[in-house]
Length: 148
Picture 1 (cartoon, rainbow, N blue to C red):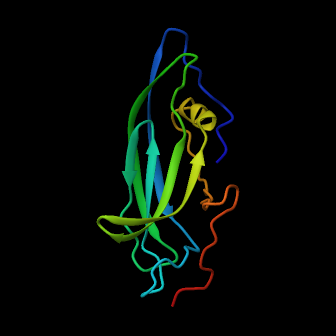
Picture 2 (tube, rainbow, N blue to C red):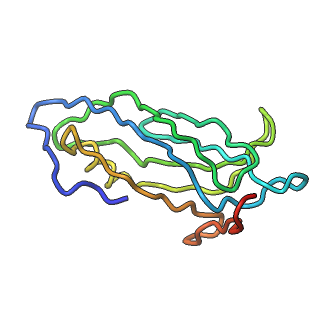
């Protein structure tokens, strides 16, 4: 995800209130996670600025479609200080209400998020996040066959 080119700086002594809306569209090439049924029941957990949201599980599919907008409450950004932190998307396989398996994680670093919260109010960007597996720097490999 690339941060916006243009930013609207917060004037000295002012505070800007920023809300973040994220649309979780879907995924592709999910890994085979379920031994018996052979597919994946994936869902996303999004974390930013001390807030957490999650999608519903897309059941028995390698190509989940969530199509949900998740809104993070407003955070206050002061001039010269944008402590918004990383944006983290964790992808899980749903096993039961108390069990989940981590598939992988994608992170938008704090320095990009600082520019995003200072973007013009109508700024939007479509981005594809690559889910990273347990090995550092290695993208998670998924199931590459088409569904029936």
